Length: 445
Image 1 (spheres, rainbow, N blue to C red):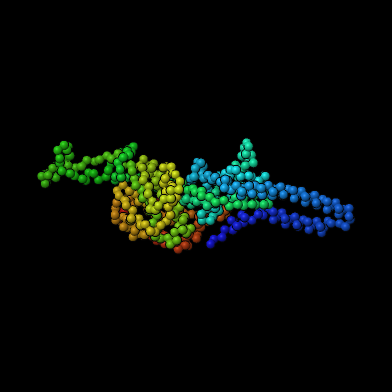
Image 2: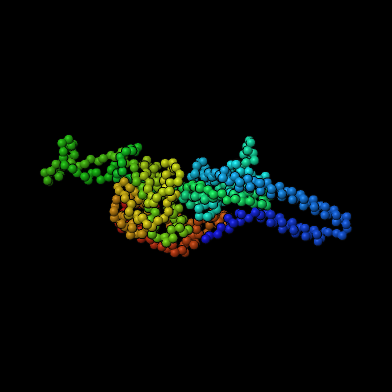
């Protein structure tokens, strides 16, 4: 069981400032008593009186902050069922955003704010990790001047996935930052983060047909292969299309099928396979890093296809956790946030046809890819997921000035000497060799 020391420390009532202040006060009292305490009763009396005045002032100063912070804490504890933190992710006022440094705003209505102090909130996710601190120190207006309004900060959330917050660590802190009274509030807040837009070198994709000819595109395009088809001459056919060479040879009247302009070729079925046979541990740091990159590429492929005035019917090879209503424009990002590497459902089990595109990672085996190519029913896009880790700087000096969780995902040096890299690179070379020696239709990114 993983022990989270930050979580344990959050429930300790004394903050570092209080401990430092107590130690300094003890040292000062000891120093004054030994160096400046004299035997004359009059001077000694004045020194004691002065010490009592200072001590009394410190007790009042510390006591006011302590008592009011404790009152705010007990008010929250007794009313915790009616005080629910409201979390807002992203800049558009909804529960989505791009992975990375994510703007997070939390409001805590009906709670009391400590006098000149603040409330500190940390989000605890389902894996036990804690978010960065969100500080609430703003007051509401009007008749609710003593009630906290909201707090916001940038929280480092690098994974393109669904985040489920199982609770909040809510700490009430006095204005001297001597005391901290923490309460845990269970929650069922969830949100998802998707990929950002990146530049990819994607070739134009034109499937030979569509699933349903119901939606026209702006520009009609030619359907491939029509000039190679012939049919018997029938009444009503244009005699100008009779193939006289065949008639002279076989005495059969046949006509060449005319080139067809299909104005409905706008609907593309896009299948994404997260089939992974190379990674032993599908949740390792290397696997997660390559998963994030794979999602980035897939997300931007779909964006580019939509820019070509084509409608994308997006599918992944696993169930989607529909925990929130999603805008249709962001459905691809939401479905990708629900996906993970899997090794149970083969890419060859996907039912694809001529209007389909199948996107796979370079973590499938060459045998599986060979079977997929032999079917020849779909365009195939292969994403080399090692490219992301290979392109990192060997010595990233920027990391010297960043927090541990905000640094580059992995060290390039450790990646280069890892056994995972060797296995992935060997598999990618086999895939490139297979593609060059087969009837591969598609692209390697």
